[in-house]
Amino acid sequence: MSAARPADDTARVTARTGGEEVVETAHAPGRDLLRAIVEASGEGVVLCGADDVVVMLNAAAARLAPEVVPGRPVTSGGAGALFDRDLPEGESRESEHGPFRLRVRREAFGVRHRAWYLRDVTTESARTDALLAERRRTEFLVEAGARLSASLNTRRCARAAVELAAAFLADAAMVVLPPAGRRQAGWLRATAGRRTLEEGSIGADATARVPGLTEALAGFPPVPSRWLDPGQVPAWLLPDGFGPAGHLLVTPLPGNGVPAGALVLARGQDGASFDEEAETLVRVFAARAGTALSAATLYQEQSATNAILTSGLLPPELPDVAGVRLAGSLRAAQQAGLIGGDFYDVYLPDADAGADPGAEAGGPLVVLGDVCGKGARAAVLAGQVRQSLRTLLLVDDRPERLMPLLNRSLLASPSPNSYVTLALGALRPGRDGHVRVDLIVAGHPPPLILRRDGTVHETSARGSLLGALRNTVLTPAAVDLAPGEVCLFYSDGITEAFGGPSGREMYGGQRLKNALATCAGMPVSAVVERLEQISTDWLAGTTQDDRALLAVQAEPAR
Image (cartoon, rainbow, N blue to C red; front, side, top):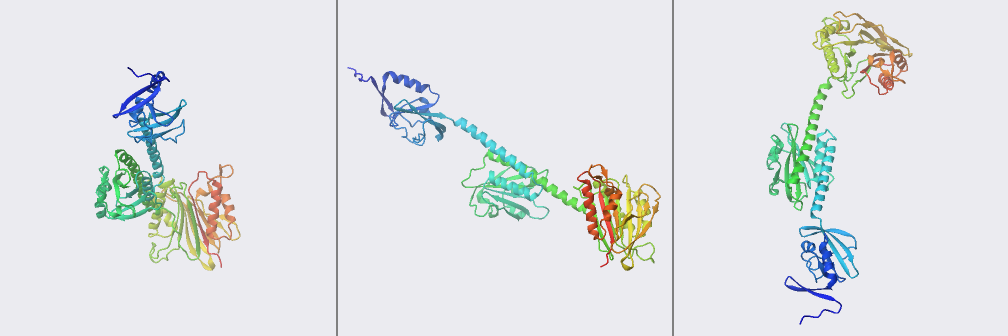
């Protein structure tokens, strides 16, 4: 005889799971419908009673959480971490479970049941993690590009490189710069969590003991990245207190045809190894760091060369002359170069110079000139004129003879447009503090004389442009400076400066005379500073020509 049906129309279902019988009890008419609903769900569903015992689960839940079986508590079999009873209803969280990453949600199911919904987000999460990782790498490379290109100083570039690498790529990072000539290789190191940097230098024998470092410093042809055995690492390669290194990587820093150095990265024993993806990122970063270091090195070399070349073109330091005080100012039109076509110089007498061996050596010679053009080309020609004058003074120190000789030299120059204007003064201190100035002017604005009473007058010296005509026409002049009086040499960049309230008005010679008149009684350095400031204020930032001032003052009476 078959078993009688229960009075409450409840079906008794027996299932065998893992060799053990599990009993499920449900209303027969509703059970099949319930199972159909659970199985039709796109998510894994675990249906539990009020006591958290599993009543039913669909195939998706059985695949995602195979340890969950009907008739047992949902948290048994190692699934406790997945089914958190403190999770509020309606909320979800993600959890790693075996090979899956699951999104778990708890919902009320009727009056007496509770349902756990499991959704496999492994692929979705991996894709999201990959996108986030790529975003972090991109942000890192953007920051690296900005910081590495922010300076053309080699040490600052190396510092930026190690700080970036220690913050994102490794626990410690070191940049080793290639040795220059016979000098040792310099290095700079940063460590994650430490604010101070370490730096030092090593010889060729020390770099040879690090496998791959010598090849990386050679840099050409390109050397692939190389992992190091931590046991082969010398002590100087790691920072103090770092502990044993778990992973080391040496990467060359490729420069612009020349090696820029090497990057050494270290990760601790607890850190992840350098996988292929990490090494690719390191190489991209190393390429940018190498380019920045190479550009900084090239810039510093060119700057050093430029400084040496321009040092001979800059205005000289004015010497001390007995009975005379000197002050000068030069402002080039191209301020970035600090050099231009205006120049001034002071030549002290040489007792052995002079065409006539029996003649007495002349006094100091002051010169202010202006060559054709602006910028570096004009500065080169100005330097040639200064050196030509210095050489010609060994032949003849008389001003009236220097100008024709210099004119012949310029006419013979292979450079086109070798036109020069000059104002030259021979200083001859006299009695009672007076100074005689013998003036020769060649195509240049004649000097101005500031008397002690504040009157200003223009000298009568005149002359033709040098480098244009075979024969020079010169009208010399001589002035006597009483103590405290000033003879001002200036270039046309002062008087022909356009500016003022409208920005289109020329400064002119009369304004210069008026400004000079206000300088009576001032020290010569103050005279030059005041005139330069007035000229600068007149320009008010507009385009300018080269401007030069040279003031000669008879030493004021005490």
